[in-house]
Length: 160
Image 1 (cartoon, rainbow, N blue to C red):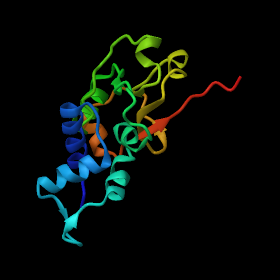
Image 2: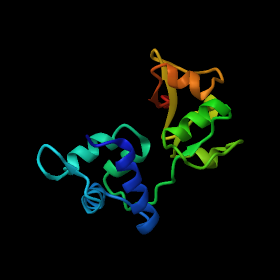
Image 3: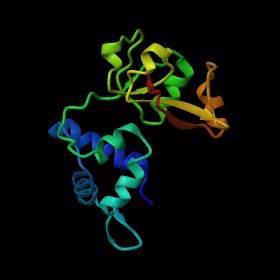
Image 4: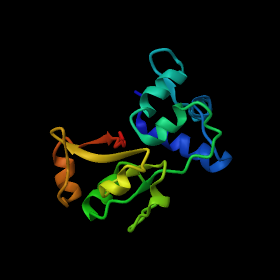
């Protein structure tokens, strides 16, 4: 089974080496590492890579047309120690900004709680979710792991 961590690591390697990534590049990198689909005996398809990566902001960047565009990398703004540690454990190791401004948030994928006046500037916001509700309290990594906590994506748009 193709894991998110394998795909994410290959993607990060591509971005660090070439400044951009692609599904084809990830496919080739995984094949070079000998990671193949056990059912077919062939490298994982680009579609399988897209499905795995579509669950996270960095994967959405892969799937967007014109990935050559300079997209600001995602950032972490959550000040809660437990949530930040949980994000890092899940492989979300983006830059942490403790006191974000509009210029820091504009057009980016953001992990963590933001005041509403900043949230409207984010491309989307990712928060830990438990029972369809965002986790708002500062809880430990162990508490988050003991429940079925996932990341949920939120978008706030100005209507008028």
